[in-house]
Image (cartoon, rainbow, N blue to C red; front, side, top):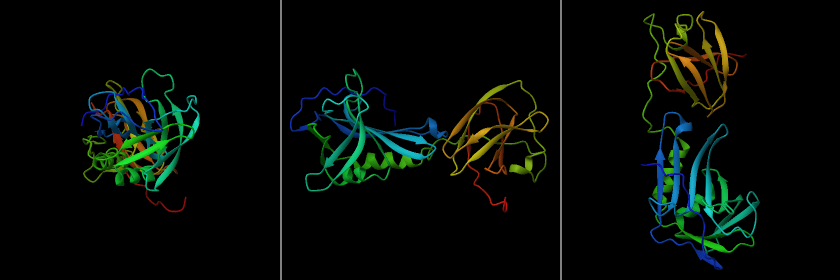
Length: 284
């Protein structure tokens, strides 16, 4: 799908005790653009008028070392509170079910963007389940007038959003990387150490290494003499961009420094996904 332009609606809305946002033409849509480097993936869920900046709800997938979560911006009455003020946003389905979530005020006096509340939600948050089973939800902050959001039709786009956010590289075009010249027919992976080194610095190639495993990984450059130069460490989900050269090898290690895989920078290769799982090397 096409990616949503990052221009959001300003909230100029007439309020009543429970206000239904002007929802003529509103639809639920997911926008998913996956890349081999998860930090270049864009995954969002929107409730608004397609191809416009008129929206009520905007969720974007956020990827970090601690895992993924959904950043949700929703139009709401801010009750005169300033930007950054902590608030509780209450949702109810009118039949006794609901949830209360902690968030912050955003967009006050802004010309563009959502004026309302921003929430940081786990992908398993109960609000998403509530959205699936009810066609209309009411919500408000303490002292603020209420809004309604219509959730009919959200199930498909919501499931696509949560699935893509949970695995932001699934379905992305594969990247050819880490291919090594084979000086011996049985050499592979870390067996290449001692047989590969940086050959020259004639052809610059910037490359981003993304840690797609569930643990810490170290990155070491194999220099022109075959010696190791520490480049840095990556926690799960983190990435590092290196100004390198074609033919330059890198060793990927676990925390104690054991080699797990080796890659060599190739022409046109801008990303490399670190995927080799950890191994047990005995007590260390």
